[in-house]
Each structure stands twice: as C-alpha cells, then as structure tokens.
Image (cartoon, rainbow, N blue to C red):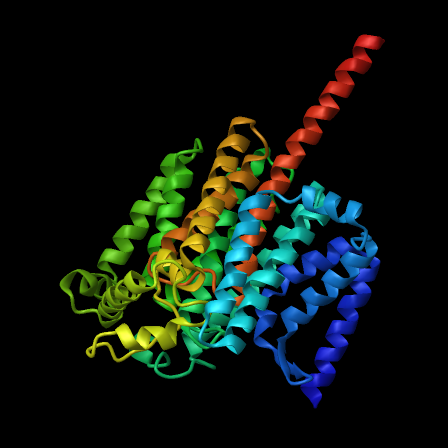
Length: 435
C-alpha cells in the first residue's frame, strides 16, 4: 500500500512537471532510467514507474502538440531521424509478437522495449532542441550514472545488498540494485564512453558539462564496471577509448591510458586469472556462451525468417540446446543473434541499418565540424554498446532500450546546432553586406 502511494505521488509530481516544462520532463526521464525496477500492477497489468513516467509524458506531448491532427502529427514525425529504418524496426517487433509462443510476455517486451522506447525517442527529438536542453540531458544522465556508481562502489567494500552467488568476498561482484553484476556494466559502460568524449573535447564545446563533472562520472563509472568484473564491458571501454583517441590531439594520453588498463588487467591478481581462463577454456561463463550460440544457430537454421518471436527464445531454444548446457538464459547473449532470434531476419536487418545510419551521421557531423564533444561522445558510447553486445544483451532491458535511442537523439540534436549556427552566420553576413 505504501509503495502504491509513493508511486502515485511520484507520477503526480512528474505530470505537473511535464505540464509546466515538457523539456524538463524529458530530462527527468533520462535521469530516472533505473526506476524501471519499481513495479506496480494497475488493473491486473504490470507497470514500472519508468513506464508510467513515459506514458504520462506521451499523453501530455500528444495533447500539447495536437497530434490528433494529421498535419501536426506529420510535422512531429518529419523531425525524427532515420524514420524508415525506425518504422521497419518497429514493424518487425510488432510481427515478432504475433509469432511468439508466449503472447503475454511478448506484449510486455513489445510495449517496454519498442513502443515506449521509440515514442520517447520521438518526443526527445521534438522537444530537446537547444544546447542548454542537451546539457540538462547530459547532466541528468551523468547524475543517474553517479548514483548507480556510488552504490556499487559502496557495495564493493561492504557487500551490502549483493545477492548470492556474487557476494562471496574472494570475488565480490557488485550489483547495485539491479540484482546481477552485468546489468550495472551494461548501463554504465556506454555512459563512460559518452562522457569520455565530452571531457576530451570540452574545451571547444558549448554543450559539454563541466569537465570536473565528466571526470567524476568517468572515474566512478569505470571503477563500478571494474568491480562488476564484467570482462566484456572492460574490453568494450578500452576499445571505445582507443577509437576515440584517433580524433584528438591528446591521443597519446588516451593511448597511454588504454595501455595502462591492459597492463593492469593482465597482472592484477584475481582479474588477470579471469581473462586467462577464457583463452585456456576453463571459464564457465565463456563456455556457456559458446554452447548457447551453437544451439541458437541450430534454432535459426530452422526458423531463419521469423526467429523465435519476442520472448520466445527460452521455450524454443529448449528444444535445440545440448544436454551439457544446463543454464537456460532469456537471450543468446550476442547482439546479432539477440535481434535475429527476437525480431527475425527483417528486424536484424533494420537494427543493422539503424547502426549504419548512426555512424554515417557521425561521419557527416564530424566533416561539418559540429560540436565534436557530443558527436564523438555518442560515437564512443555506441561503439562500447556494440562491442559489449558481442557477448551480452545491451538492448533488451527497459533502461538499455531507452538509452540506445537517447544516444541517437543526442547525435541528431548535435547536428541541428550546426544548421542553426550556419543560418545565423549567413544572416549576419547579409546584414553586414547591406550596411
């Protein structure tokens, strides 16, 4: 009962905020991504607090922008980058619901990972337009990362709230409030990449937060990822920084940090052993993934077009897995296999299309010399997300799905600033000429 009252108060406060300032409501959602962990049932239908925020935001946005009129709806959709790829992606997710063997679970995933995430993306690119608004978004996202990091670091020293089997002192793995270590790493690693770009290029940026804020986000975020002992996230961060180093005059500092990180991982007791176990075939986590990928491939040879459908992987995979594979996971833990098995071949193609369009826009933005901090920060974040995704699930979770679309929205916002600047320069030149 008390939880329901607290949720009602929180949603009411959020609605008032959205009615007052729609942009600040978008910023609030960005900073409250972990609230998907707070759950409630309304009329027998499960909701998360994050979902209630997004639904409230969507209703107010719909009414305020008069999207019930087709002309206004078209104007709002015209501002959305990658419209066709996004539409195909959403259509594939919708079709995946129909082919799923578990309709109820499929509808839940469809609502949270696709409907709400893409609706928030549409609202984001329509509302977040100015440099100040983007800066607010970055501060909100960084603050969320700091809160998660602070709790994770406290856990690393105290063990508070860490469930078994990750609470063992010999190899304690922090979980924050997510319940398992990799969830912390999946959330924090891309944000570390984003703020690394913001920090490196902060000097010539009107968008980047204060360098001290970015530095704290990077340090605490990296420490937290380290304490999760997620090898995939650590490697992804190293590769993200390595790519980022090619675009800055401080490249040798970044290269030095990358080399230092590799040396630390190679010699630190307890850490180096976990990396060596991968190559020696003694790591259970790696072996489970190899076996699961083999079973998933067998599944896809029989269901290559539609996959297993949303939320259908556990049921369908149970027929194809090997007897020696006793662990049954929700997803194949590989970003290509994840999308293929969940959304089918068309959904996988749409995701690849979105990623290609993203990096093409990064290249175009860089050539136009827009705000490099934002462009290269989002680039580093996406690289980390994709690299980590080679062995994990960086999209199919409430906060991660929205984080993916926030990165695309931030990049698109950065391009818009250059256009405004160019227009202003032209207007100024014309004024001088007329004088």
